[in-house]
Figure 1 (cartoon, rainbow, N blue to C red):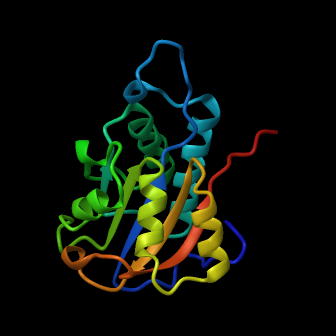
Figure 2 (cartoon, rainbow, N blue to C red):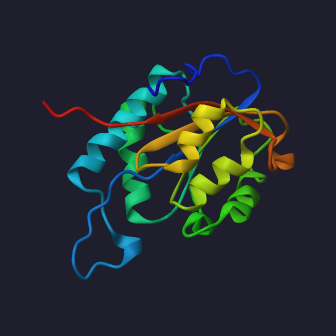
Amino acid sequence: MTPGTGSGHEQSGIRLVLLRHAKSATPQGVEDHERPLAPQGRDDAAEAGRLLREMDCAPDLVICSPSLRTRETWAHAAASLGGGELPVTFDDRVYEAGPDELMTVLREVPPDAVTALLVGHNPGIEELAAALSGDADPDSLAWMTEKFPTAAFAVFAVDTSWSALGPGTARLVSFVVARASHD
């Protein structure tokens, strides 16, 4: 976990996890949408899932970009999260989306969902995180908006309903960069 961020346990109400896809490979001749994860990316995605489990941030539902690298990121994270099958929606709108489009997608989360996880891409994920952040620790917010690396995730306590989600309606609770150790 990143110093200066919360444990993830102090949220009440609903919360949102924004996860940027893990490090992808760049094979020659492969379209962007079909780029797979690099070996380090697979390990980091699994570490993200382990950290989410440790922080008690297992989602009720997942919204994921349909790109190969985001689908693989979620598959590796989910395997480490444990707890069985989680509902996943692969939403075309998440691929190459900006913060406004991502906010629209999140406003459609069912009202009974307690924790939603969005797996997406930069710059959209980073820009959405900055837009949502209301009352955040300035150091954590500055670090998150300076660079939202691959396999990083931000956990927000949402101060409103999903349908009313908008700029400044969430509080950054944790910002974590998942990196698997390689001995």
